[in-house]
Length: 433
Image (cartoon, rainbow, N blue to C red):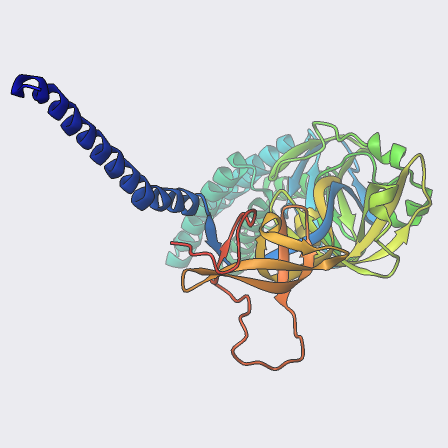
């Protein structure tokens, strides 16, 4: 065989060697790097978190209806009501909460102001006739003029309490001036006539205004909803879920502060007389089962987050699949006096401790109270038995199980320990990078 015939065979052999070398290189790469890639990919999917402190509740959300001892206060006549207190304010027995004046009151106050001016002018005339120019008299006259100016200002501002004080000051100054002048002008017919006229107007003023005074202590509310006589403590056992469902508060139930219009015989405020009150909550019969009479519970007002402590005082029989649970409270009366119903959480129990997602626990078969949590200790997984104290379907409160061994180096679940969020396909001793 010639040299020319040997060359193609040699080339084919070299090509085969190169192909084999490439195959070995690829296989070496796969053997060396693919396991690392798989390990990395698997570890990248292992989500971890830390154990934190938290709280779980056994509670039910519903609408609660406020039941109180409420005394409705009515107006003696139609007109304007000047309120002396604010919504939810506590008052003592005999406290003046408002003054009601009728439509003639403003005219009478204006008339009294005119008479006071005429009396003052007539006394000045009498003083001038007697040539009595004492510095004391001039000073008192100036003070009377200032008080009259203030009286007009307060009248324009409808500040009736201050109007009465100004009138008393003016009367006192006039009496003082009379003493200085030796009761001058007492026999003057015109002055005597004006003084009598002034007294008559004052008598009419007293007939056209009336103070509203409490006959017992309590909390005042200006929210009148029409259920004051129906929703009271004595009637709780006669209530039904259907009756409470029908409760609707009118848009004009709340009155503002300051001056409001009132009608004769119509309510304008109410006095909540007892410290204790109730909140009645309609619940599905199944949800109402855990709540027993005389048990301690808490009520959270979801609107502001305020939590009130109380006692279950009454629980009705099942009515069309629902029960009424009545809770007696003695907190936050002032804040809730104007509320007839509110969205609430009725809290039976609450638990505080180590809180983790429920899906992070591997429950033990046949024992709902124990489970396994996978901790990450020095980058390796460790299976730890724990006790489930409470759960709500999403989270759980856990605690360590005392096995009585007393081993000081035993691994336990503690605050801020790292754990595996999803325990599926995780083995004990697995490296978690």
